[in-house]
Length: 288
Length: 263
Image (cartoon, rainbow over all chains, first blue to last red):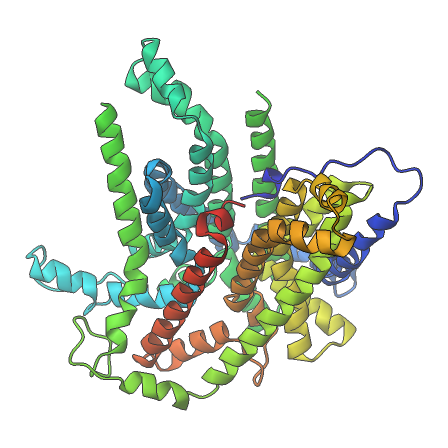
């Protein structure tokens, strides 16, 4: 599920002159150049532009203020916890999904896939109903006798992590599933024939073969979670500020464009680091 | 030990599916409640919240706007993306790998960063019209989905089959229509579907570009959730979920769900 997973199309023999077919790429390239690349460069430019010429004031304010450093730390922590939780749940689930037979696999696949297509607003709204004081979880626990009176769950960090994992879990399961599905199930069997213990088979055969899927899933979930906006602001509000929330506030409420642009550049750097890191890892894994 | 591993995997899958479906399924009973708050278990049965959908200010307008923007953006992306994919697969394009990465890169960019960049650029060039800036932004959002799937299916297609069809007596356009189109159709349909959903659902980019009169559905829904959270929202959500299930079933019938998502 990353750009690196796409095989670069093979280019036919070196062009003598410019191939007229190559011109077909121009409209799309020009469009993204003007509507995507140019605005992005403009944003980076405005993060180093002060009232009178060049200024790093925005970065000094973001990286020198303990509050904003704390926000960056909180976003990274949210990304890490979400990724770890999704990996622990998603990895074994992806195996079961890949090993399911025939019609079952289609049905189970659809059930994992469906939440991806449901609006994030609807899902966050649903989480609210689940976690409310008079919500389904408290109701279930009361009836089971696990608790004596409703507990407050919404607006807690635990609820935020659960909600984040809920939203991003399919992005972990699907890439791992698509790698495991292509794996030859006879390989662990062959290792077993050669006397490998189950633990050895898993750590030396199955796990290394599934790593490309894990790298794709981890990088996807982390980069989505670290930049998340809707879920944290609905489940936590101002109590848990993420980089995205600071950016939104800076642009929409404070009209402080320099602050917002500098924060955006920091988030962009994190995202670029993850993408580049993942593609280097993928190349290493593929090149063995 | 072997059985233990398999047991863990199956337990995890069942838990994952229950966990994923929980927040989606709970809104359905709440939408039929008689009470004015969403308490669980819901009390009684009524369709009043569905009837109220019509009275919510701007909701149907937002739905219509989102549908139009998503359809237009997807169509434009399909046009620009397909042309680009044909050039990359069939033509001698210098730096083809770099161009491919560039065309799918909006997908890896945090949505808010894209939204802010576009807001700033729109102000810079004096584009004040929310409708047009939304449409342009959504073409950027949808392009990676279209590029990935169309490029994927085009590069898997063996163009010698078109020549074979012509040898067997088809004219060139007929050969394209009877051989090329059926082969790459699943890629097109799934790319278009993903693109449409990505646009229809987008919040972080749109939030910077909407104005008071031009609001997309996710923005309008979140506004409503913040101002007056009542079961009307559950009714709208149930409707959206039903629509999604319908589209998924349709796609499964047309191209096969697994084939769609494997690209």
